Image (cartoon, rainbow, N blue to C red):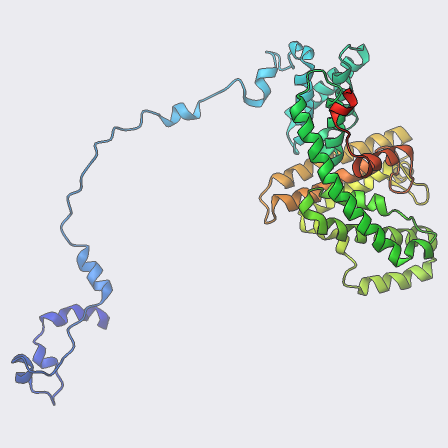
Amino acid sequence: MDLLLLPSLSNCCFPRLLPSNINASLVTSGSSVRVPRPFQCKAAISEIASHDPIVARRSANYQPSIWHHNYIESLTSEFVRFSIVKDETGQFKASLCHDIKGLLCLYEASFLLIEGESVLEEARDFATKELKRYINEGNKDSNLSTIVRHALELPFHWRMRRFEVRWFIDENRRKKDMNPMLLELAELDFNMVQAVHQEELKQMSRWWKSTCLGEKLSFARDRLIENFIWAVGMSWEPQFGYFRRTLTKINVLLTVIDDVYDVYGTLDELELFTDAVERYTFSNSLWLLSKCFSGQISVDLICRRQSGITARGDVPKSIQCYMKETGATEEEAREYVRSSIAATWKKMNEEGAASSPFSQTFTEIAKNLGRMAQFMYLYGDGHAKQNRESKDRVFSLCVHPIPPHRDEQE
C-alpha cells in the first residue's frame, strides 16, 4: 500500500520531507547539497500512462477477405482418398488393369501404410491381384515382368537398400531404352562404394583372424562376411565406415554367444555365463540403435518372425511354436507370420513418420535392421547356411564390381 503513495510525493511540500538536520533554505536556494530526485513506482507510471489520450492511428483501408470460412471448409476434390482411381460404386476402375507400371507404383506405395489406412490396404490387395494376373498371362515385356515378379516377392520398402541398387543396375543394363550416361554413372558410383567396403572387410578379416576365436570355438558359426553384410545393410554410405567396423565386431561376437547358448553350453554353464555377461557393461551394445529408436520392439519382431519362416533346426522357431500352440497347419502358420510382419511394418512406418529426437539417418538405420532380417532369411537361413543364394549375394555386394557396359557390348 505504501508504494501507491509514492507518486504523490511530487506534489508534497518537499522541505517537510527533509531530515531535521538539513537546512531547507539551503536546498531551496540552489545549494550544493545534493538531494535525490523524487521517484515514482513503475506500476503507478503505467497506470497513469493508461489514462493518456488515444493516439490517432493511420488506416490502410484494406477490404475484408473475400474468402468466407464456410466456402473454405466446403472444398472437395476428386483426388482425395483415391477417388480418382475408383468408380461410382467404390471399386477400383477396370481401366487401371491395363496400366501395369501404374499398378506397380500403387503396389509399392501401399506398403507405406500405417494402422487404420484401409484404403491403402484395398489398393495393395487390388494391385497384387492384378499384377499376379499379368504374370500368369505371360507377356512379351520380359523386363517389366521381371520387375513385377521381384516386387511381388518382396516390396521395395522392405528390401535391403544396397542390394536393390545392384539389382536395378543389372536389370537396367538389359533394357533397350536405358539412359547410357545415367547407367554409367550408377555403375561407377556402385563400384567406388564397393571398393570402400572391400577395404573395410579386409580390416575385419585381419582382426577376426587375430582373435583366433574361429579356430578355438569350432562349434560356433564362423560368419565374418555375413556379419559384415548385416552392417552394410544397415548403413552402406562410405562415411559410416567406423560404424560398420564396430557393428561387424559386435555381430561376430554375438553370433558366437548365440551358438554358445543354442548349441554348446549346458544349463549350469549357461547360468554362469549369463551372470558374467550381465555384469559386462557392453553386453547390450548390439541393441543400442534399436532401443534408442521408439520402434525397437518392431525391429526385433521382424527379425524373429522372418527367421522363423526358415528355421535352422536347432531350436524351435516361430512357425513351429505357432503350430504347437494353435494346432495350425504349416501353411497357416506361415501366413500368420507373414501377416505379423506386415502389421509390424505398419507400426514402424508410423513411428518413422512421427516426431523423433533422433536424426533421419539414425532412425533409418534402425529400420534397416528389419530390412536386413528379411534379406538374410528370404531364401533360407542365410546367416547359418551358406547356400548358393547367399554366396551370390556376397559376390554381388562385396566381391565382383560391375563391368562397364560398353565393354560387354564390345
